[in-house]
Image 1 (cartoon, rainbow, N blue to C red):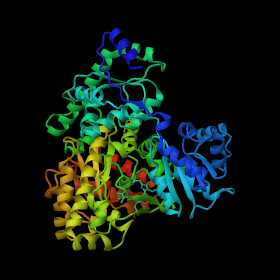
Image 2: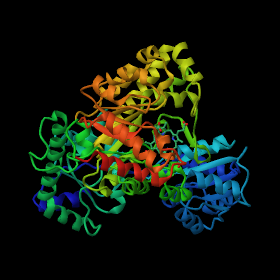
Image 3: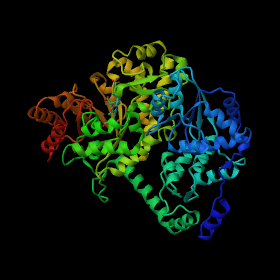
Image 4: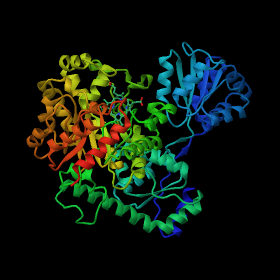
Length: 632
Ligand code: 1CP
């Protein structure tokens, strides 16, 4: 419909840059499908997993160009056929294929594995030969889970669309977008945008293109492409009332000026906020009140006077809270992190319930290890467990640097959703693990007591250690910048386990990397550098260029304020105080506030996260006490 769309745009007074981005792959070119058909009819497979309805139909259509449909249906019916969801089930039934296993909601790899293992008609996975139909996205997690259980897996990637044979018009369009000559992007299918990004990636300019695209007013024809755009980190600015091409272009034309102005205004305001935070010279309220920027938490990050001491608590959304446990009873932890609307609900509910002055993104520091090429599981809903750990130099080489826009887009989405649902004056904190704490998980494979593997690698092979830390640091910096861009007002770096190191080892093996991360972060977005159990490292942590330093309960807050005059401090009530009694909680809170002595730049927090057995009433009492005792 390129010509028709261009004509409509011109008719409405616009200039159309036409860039065909999709080529239909003829059915007869699907060689993967033919190879699969041959194996299928010769009885190679025990189990066939159909992931999507469209993909299943497309696979059959392609195979049918070479093999009679009856033979295909007979061959697949002789295997244990698994339908991932209702759509693939409908497609399979359409061909008359009996389904041995149907997978319950939410249809993730976990349910697929569990359904196969539970099914009476199912075959054991150990030693089974499994074919996995793919369409659009690879299912690495499922593939890995099948292999871990002893299955032989063959993926059958069958696609309908490829990049056009001639990509010159697409590349020309990319050049125009990069040169900022375009104002609006009209999207009628998400595949177009995927291909646009893929073409840019081939030319090594994907990141620049993403930046430029965020400056355009993005118009999406309907909810399906809007959802995919949001997943790609490019949420649309406009969607028409009806998903019809003519009406779409007409509505965009009518609103074009407003859309473009609105986007420019949004970018201008963002830049102003960043600048204002960076300079921190301006008194609040001078240039119109910015509720977020003038919230007590943000003022404290910049060491400005506050009406009362802001407080939030590490792990404020967690197992100590009934509301959280209810959500968790239904949904595995990783799924919860990957579903933006649920992650937002959990984060916002916790902030409101306890009355905290900031919310923290609901996620986990370990999600970044999956796109690095490692496996991640939370065993028994508790401690994390990582497979394919790094133990030596050769392992470091296969550690992948993360493109967060690609593989952690759900985090950006969770930030946008949470930001939308939070009150206008409640800042949202994004976060990541610090390079050392992440390295400790990547090497040990989980939590650790003595960090034997981590320290051994560090001392035995400093070259491999630094290479690993560099890969992690670059990934962390990009990840945090993505979070800031998605709408996080501040960024916390958790170095939870760094206290196991001597000052000399910290200086040699960790400090340069953490500093590199902080140096690479978007200027003007305050960074909170947190460690625990590491009072002897505090000077070096303070030297990394952070706006806010985490101080745990082992630190004398009064002395720390004097020692780091240019830095805000966050802390530092012992989390175990919350198990004592209401008067004892108030007393301990008053003591922490007294050691801060009303100096600007104090953010009240615990020394470490809220423990799971903490009574929620104690947490609420603590927040109230901070507000009441510190109010001017
Ligand atoms: O409100 C919030 O703070 C929730 C968001 C959040 C954050 C900031 C979670 C959810 N995890 C984290 C950070 C995190 N994760 C850290 C740094 C903070 C700290 O030092 O406490 C660390 C070390 C992790 C790793 C991790 N994830 C652990 C520790 C295990 C160990 O001993 O190595 C655990 C238990 C998790 C799982 C997890 N993460 C978050 C929650 C709510 C949970 C529990 C999962 C469940 O519901 O069962």
